[in-house]
Length: 434
Ligand SMILES: Cc1cc2nc3c(=O)[nH]c(=O)nc-3n(C[C@H](O)[C@H](O)[C@H](O)COP(=O)(O)OP(=O)(O)OC[C@H]3O[C@@H](n4cnc5c(N)ncnc54)[C@H](O)[C@@H]3O)c2cc1C
Image 1 (cartoon, helix red, strand yellow):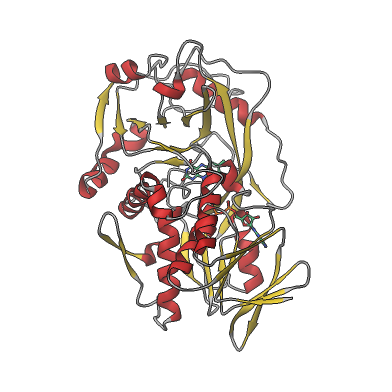
Image 2 (cartoon, rainbow, N blue to C red):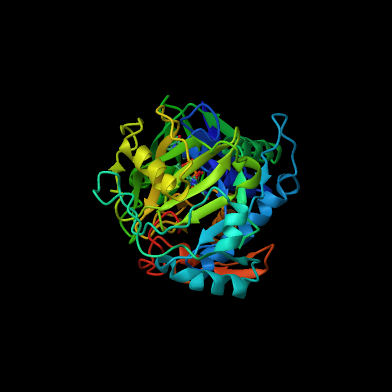
């Protein structure tokens, strides 16, 4: 059976479903295709779903601050009720340790000053008041446990941090994606699950639709690649790789889940903490657990993988992360049974995503989310929908880039910041921090 629509979206993760919602709001019908059995079952389901506002670049910071508001006003933004319930944003705030590695947050605080993002400076006393389980001895540089100097203090202590109140995390990233799907369906979007796009159809030099693994076709003049770690494969299917200066690759990631130290309610009292001194970030989790992720310090080897056939088991990376955090929290209990997630980031060469058209008329991409774009999904969806509308109206985005106003913070961004043809952005942290 052949379906026809205005736009096909490959991938129903959190960004893919947000694009579906926003295209329908602009009056373009969509069919989303995902090989998984439901929305948000890919890397989105493993996301720590941290909503934070500090990024290395001014544009990245503005985008994230804009993004925060959609989670704050989630029900209002969606305008549709999901009978499974609505995702919850726990606004715990985020503490970032000031270290020599992040230049004591000078650049980040300058961005926040310019954008009027609230933050507080905490000294060591205030940090310990809020997190009495913490020991602020410095352990820089982060090491792995097989390093004979692992656990030996470096010089000095962490003396201060910056606390961002407009931050936290979404408790159920998969449910938030389902919420977006329900809103997209209410606006006219359709979803096909359990089917893989195996071919991208083209005729007369532009996109014509897709062929699925059951042989069926869906016809549309627009196809959007939101395939996460499979993004490079989907770009190859479309023949869209040739003019790109920025590539994407799948990177394996592990997140450790450990119980909080006995006697301290980290779920109620804790917050998101980014700690470059030990190369870890953490956030609270239900059941008084703590999620521990890596901030990609130099000691952690990067494991680039084939997304189709990588090993989904924990490795010793889990243990390295947990023990690094135990340097900061000496009373941490590390269970012998590993819990947590193993999944993939879709990483660009500079860890900044690509939100762009392509060299193939009608083919677009929202890819390379580099472990840091869950928070931006709603605004990325809105910006992609406007970009598609702009290009399909005949505008040449590559030479006259779309200028897009971020509706909440009323700031204009030049969308070529996210171009597939940009030079590597040297201001990036080249890590999950973006
Ligand atoms: C461990 C981990 C922790 C993270 N933590 C955070 C965080 O704290 N904060 C933050 O902002 N971001 C975080 N991220 C990043 C964030 O989760 C991702 O940026 C976001 O979920 C990507 O969403 P997406 O819509 O691009 O799709 P994805 O979730 O990547 O899904 C892509 C979908 O495409 C489908 N697909 C692929 N190829 C095909 C095909 N050929 N045919 C049909 N379907 C196809 C897949 O089945 C999949 O469902 C984290 C990511 C990971 C892995």
